[in-house]
Image 1 (cartoon, rainbow, N blue to C red):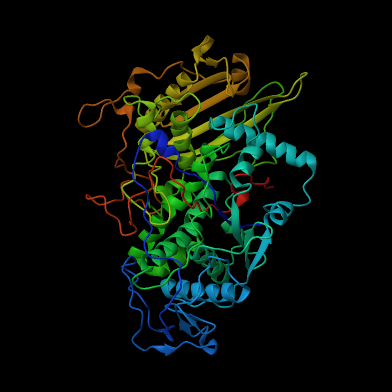
Image 2: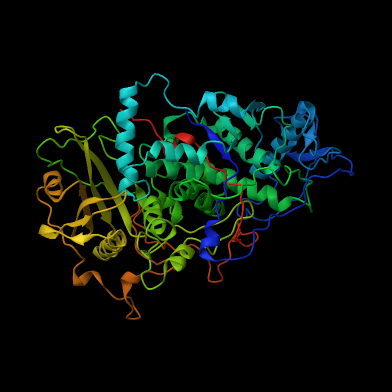
Amino acid sequence: MRRCLVLVSVVALLIAGVAGAGGAAGVGGTTGGEATTSASTTATDATTPATDATTPATTASTTGASPTACTPETDTDVVGCWDGVAHDETFTFNQSDGLTPSQLEALTHRSMARVEYVRERPFQTDVPVETMTREEFRANGTGGTSNESADDRRAFDRWNDQVWEALFVVGENESSAEAIDTVFGGSVSGFYSPADDRIVLVVPAGSAVQIDESTLVHELTHGMQDQYHDLTRSQYVGTTQDADLAVDGLVEGEAVYIEERYTERCGDEWQCLSASESDGSGGGLGSINVGILQTILQPYVDGPFYVERLVETGGWEAVDAAMADPPSSTAAVIHREPAYEPRDVAFEDTARGDWTTYPDQGVDGAETAGEASMFVMFWYQSFAGPEAPVLDPADDARGNVRLHLRSSETLQTRTAYTYDHPVTAGWAGDELYPYRNDAGDAEQDGYVWVTAWQTPEDAAEFEAAYHRLLDAHGATAAPNGTQVVSTGGFRGAYGVERDGARVTIVHGPDVDDVFDLRPDLRPEAEPPAESVGTDADGDDATTGTSESVERDRDTSEGASTSADTTSETGEDTTAGAAPGLGVVVTVLALVAVAALLARRSRR
């Protein structure tokens, strides 16, 4: 079951403290307080669009050409009105002492009217908003199959542990399931459930109900999406980790995009309520695995700009068309290329001995990590663990952490990051096959990871970065071109082979296991000399930069497009204030679908 969750208490960019950046994010508009102005009684007629769809960032007029009275009878006929509450209505209450049921209902109806006004279409029916305590939420869980056996769950967890170990984010003595639960646990403030057609707010037992209206707008957008597209359909759950993130880039991207349009109207055009200042603030990252966190944040960062590109080029009709055929890779979302399709990666299981795959997990035993997860893999080695410069060896670890923060695009409602880097921008596809060997006294795990790249040069750049990653973990040369990491959570033997635009990575407990897993592997302990190419200026191309690079990418239409989607000035119409890069910055991280990374097996 898909659930669109809202996480709070995520100190997402204490990261920035490590990076040594400064300046906090600004959020447009004024909030809360006792309203004194009178309520509006007009809204925009559904036949008169409130905004020009080709200029999505422009603030629309508060009245249409033919203003219509906002009454309960006009709910589905007038855009910007719900149950007699108009989008520009003001309230005489605040929520310093919490919201009463009637006040929450009025706030919900105004937020529905605002989603209609920005999205230029009416809700088809009401979206109930309910509350539950955190204890009730924990008891209810975050979805998934209730009839799953303990053996099935254990098999999935073991399989998924290898995926996150291959990404150098969760070590062999850690549980990926527990790490993922830690990101979500205790932080969910609410969710929209397509199965139940409702929003649930999670509140502490005995506490007053307080909510940021922008959060409500975000979740109500999911409600509208569900009414028009049915979010329970299989197309909104990707078959792989990369596809999941890509679908969320569209679904969550539209919700953030509308949330941004709401925020920019606050103050000058709309009265907006927000929760108390203490709500959602945290004291630090604590035990949260930042590698997992930054992976699941990617749809919320790149998604709104992806949706903006759709609106700019084809209006809201283009967004509706994309909902009928969502993107299948994070590469499409990162580079704002709706037509981009990953390549099929040919793989034949040649393992010998007692090594077997997990045919009932993933897609015939395989996972696809994708460009976003690969970027985080390299970046995370600078933030945590070895704290080594992997993406850009010419800089130090702190400088490599900053690469993730140097986005030319900004958001008003959350911190903007970049997941676009030359080391991973040439991604064309990958298949990661976890293996197991239970023949001996102890369980043994390994994996074969086949990656495809746009060009041999892209493959060489990825290979060089991967060797730097192994070096950061103390890898030493071993027989037949393998490398061995002797200590830590990622110890074992590694074999890396590049063949044209394809790089294969094999990991097993020992050197012999590498060749049992892939007998025909021809690894090299370090990238060959030709891996170190030069760019147009004669500089070392393997060092990496924070700049996006132009490259011809395979698309279904055969178009040659650029991964750099910003203007020369770095401006973007979704831009608000500068991204939040303070030493102790707390941001409201809207993260959906708890099952996104703890996905159950698919058969």
